[in-house]
Image 1: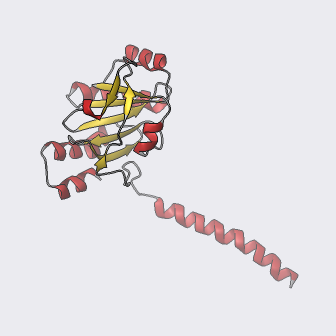
Image 2: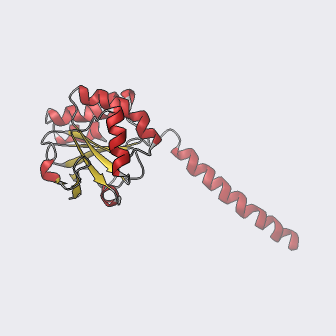
Image 3: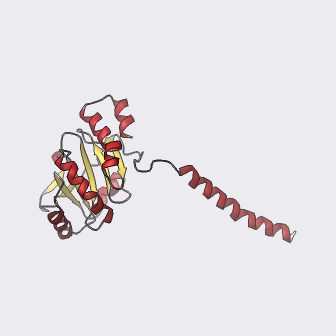
Length: 191
């Protein structure tokens, strides 16, 4: 009887381990860079945040571009943001409107970074406390959101945007939005 109990106690951790391995295995190969979440196809959360360049000026949705744009959440302390920055500059120079959300950063550090490495943002606001990031469904930085001209979030991209991800994920979504494609087409290419 005691031997049977020992075997049972040995089997419980083994079964739990196998369940965890099975869960990990089922997630392998899934694209985790584009997030399907409940914030998609909904309006950006309302906000009133200080401009990074002029903290006494409050920015709201009213100042956002009235065309599809990329909302990029970044910070000067974020290593991956620094890797992503040169490509954001390329996108900006190619005419892609990019709104920056400077996340949980010191104003001086963020401005110093942009002064040293150029500013790709058409508009840049501060989210010092991180509340807007929470409202967006942010999981870390960098993250980006494709927003349509009406202020609806259409795509949520985790991590760095590079040329490959831009061409495969962001560009098709922004193109469909610019061309005012049917909703089904937009959902297909943006998610």
